[in-house]
Image (cartoon, rainbow, N blue to C red; front, side, top):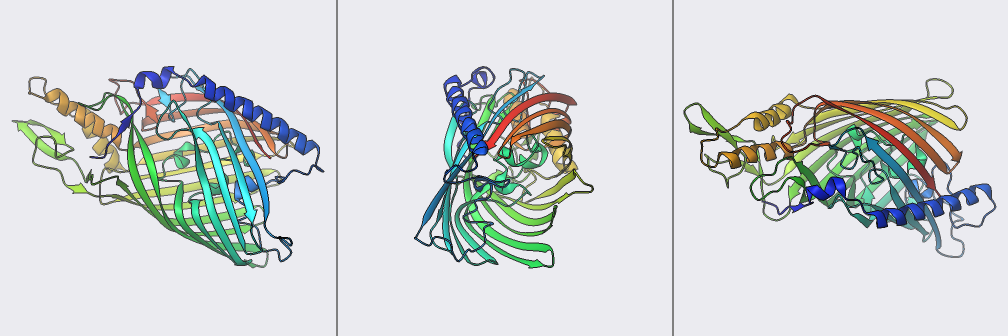
Length: 480
């Protein structure tokens, strides 16, 4: 089995990191004031002046920018930019939602700080590096400074672009600027879609070909790469040596895909086909499906590991997922904007991985500097995935069977370890543009679920039980 690491569950909901949060809040406030000063002084000579699509959002040195034959007349040039969000989120439940949101409230869910350096080496060659300070992927009560982008780009002409290095997987309409909250109105992009993909970043190669026909622009993206990740699982009760609370598995992800995008004026359509392979580190393997192990007349348990007694479990070296993504943006009338995305993840090789459909619709009304919006999101796993989770959670071994408690705990831990969902959410919010580079947002989110792996449930609670949670979020986002 892969070696997991653990967070102390008593620390997860009671401990904060005030020093880190204080420093982050101070840095965000200072940079926000800098962004305000820059917006009020357009003649400022700062190295990088953000527009509605800032360099931090699109890596202008290596993505959207066309070749300019007059660029870099005196050699390489450097431009830097930054972005950040200071966000508070609080729910009405004791248990956690989306890892960090509970009734104590906190800044961890949405706050981050990023900086980007773009180097234009020649008219054809450029390089981009981006760092982000955000909550750690390995510990729920720690923050990490990590590299999110680090690539070299070659654009021989306006139609072709090749990038190599650490990049963002183009799963979504907003993949390239999903961390830059000042570029969209929502306080938080819908978790039903953005929280379930196996990876968002990869190290590899990304080729883009673009062209125009009349007033329409087309692009085709092909990419392939790999990523080393920490996958988090919440165990309600633990099992044997595995304590309850947050558990992290080290995995390697290999992703490849094809993405086609059409855009015209305020409209856009994007279709993507992706194949993602996830495998645990080392020589560990994953169960294909649980095996029924009879223990006596009329009763037994579901064996999920060959280290437990029973007839044995078929194992696989990796989990393969096919992911279909479809998104659109449109303006049905003046001042109205409609955005929607759909995703279908289908698992291969095993029956113990995420297999689900997901999607959302967001309607926004532009009223000067104000932008109210309404979002509906839906996420549900396949019936087979939900049935496996239900059987593992609800099957029990009688107390008089030796080792029965351990067998029951193994089934509950296995039910917790596979992402399974049947949830829907409504979000009503408002964004106010203080300047072209700053936004303040407020949102009320209501989520109702029959089962959701985004809930960090308390010990002893049932996995399948209708629950609801309300979340209030207030954000300040900026770029400069």
